[in-house]
Length: 354
Image 1 (cartoon, rainbow, N blue to C red):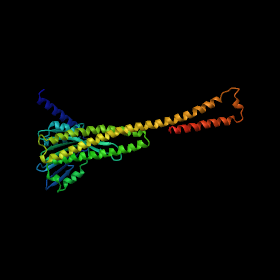
Image 2: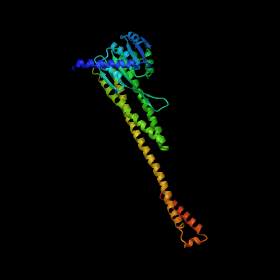
Image 3: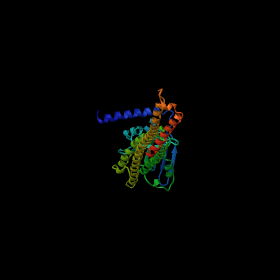
Image 4: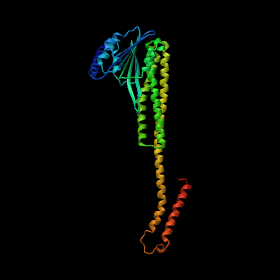
């Protein structure tokens, strides 16, 4: 099979995939948003039919089209056709299992990464796949579900005095990626707080719940590493800017995000080491408490061995045992046993066993 035939086969498979997504769209909400602006104008449109939204996309302005939900295959088809997206790029948009990466096509720069949320009141992290397509005077963003962390950015674009309105679509892409990367800091900060809480709990009274929380943190770190480490390579590819999708004056901003990711990786490694330390602390504390219990039991056993020996002697059933006829024998034996008990306590204290 030649390359042309292979491409036709892939396109056919992609169309089938888009159709399948379209069939599963029933009951699932897909939200569209178009923001268009330049230095002097601004407009925002939401919940328009896709055909009407694409007609209102003025490529003389900077356009940001945001799609919440990937279930409508027909909608993705129309967007792909409108902006002449490569079929492999469209396939990557629909594949939410991708690690962060950047791909350069003839007309577009494709960038995908994970958006993180810390769920309020819980210790879970919610991951959402998001893809960006950068073209001439437009950025397309595709999210898995409704809701994001870009509301403050939308408000800044609405203002007519900020730098966003004076820069191109590549600067908008930078701000979108930067907003996501900044959210990673809040997630890591929350994890750091969890580490401190678990450490205090372990120091006072380690429980099975603490062990489970540590294991959960370790699993989250494994996934976070898969999210953050490839992001460094993706940003490095954008910073190199070999195909010129990023204006030279804006490359420094992507470099700044790259530096933030390096810092995140360092913080992630630090927290990962702290989590391993927590596990060691948990095991050491459990072992220490177990040793304390064993020591106490050993002391009690050691004290009662001679007392049991004396009680055993006088519990024998011999007819001739002179002490049994002695009127003070009972009190004498109790006194002897009490003296042995006190002397052994003094000895153990002297040896600092407790």
